[in-house]
Image (cartoon, rainbow, N blue to C red):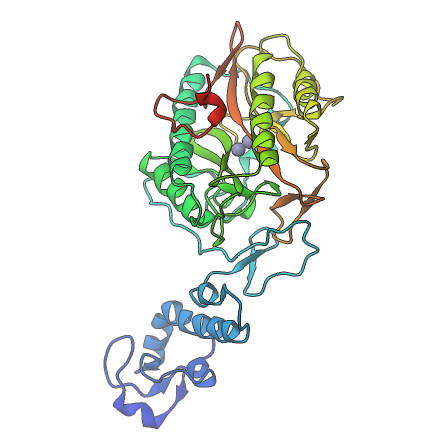
Length: 404
Ligand SMILES: [Zn+2]
Ligand SMILES: [Zn+2]
């Protein structure tokens, strides 16, 4: 931080900090040719104490000047307001659309600044600095935990909150709504329930849920793009409550979608249902992929291989790892008291994925569409309990559930 420069002609101005006559002018504001009012200070001390809030004036001015040199860019107003494109795991941001060999029609849009979480919400260890500390070093990355009845009860509570949060997001989906607005609903509903939105700052993820549109397979970042009639959008919600995580996602139709997309989404829903139906003690984890692969390939669709289901509980992601594709090498058998997710990602075209420059957004290699559904499950003595299952209050958004 540079000191203030002396400018005698500012003596008629008052200090932006304390309102006394000002004799110093912020040198950065002089350099950027910004108005002298609000940029004058009486002493170095006042300049220093104003700095942390004053410096945003410079950032705003620089961003709006960048926005002006991008004529015709529909995002320039957003950029001037401080929205930026995500680059490299959310740690750096850019006002210009990054360069990339995009696989389909979708493009990233600028993202809003980080949403705040009130002090009374208990936060996981990545909330402050973006780095999970307990999770990667836990023995539960290798051993599949058997939950105690007390842990199971907390998992039930947490997963019910996650379901209600996802349902709140589902209710606002229509053409014209931005994925950032979906994120706001998820963030506010999660906090209103007394929970923390687990994705927020997890390995620097910048938002409170994932929104994956059309060719995005998973981990799409909510941004300023308005949903369009004919889109499909997956919303993936995880909440942390009483020390446990609950994770689920669904893919929704925006307005009227084409027949292939309708079949893709319904097939993906059925893949998850069929996979859940085999869950019980003694079944091999690798069987889940066989069931999903059989149903997806029967409809001419392919199964994503790079992203898997996972154990969940006091950790967001832990053992077991659950591939959704056929002939996988997952080890182990299911036991009563285990909790994990199944979350098949099914593609209309090839199974291969690519990563956007933001380090998060996974897209199909051929740009064709992808759908996903996810539940958090508990293995019981006799079968399975779908902890994140639909509630009587859940919105009627899937036509195949009404037909019955
Ligand atoms: Zn999820
Ligand atoms: Zn998950």
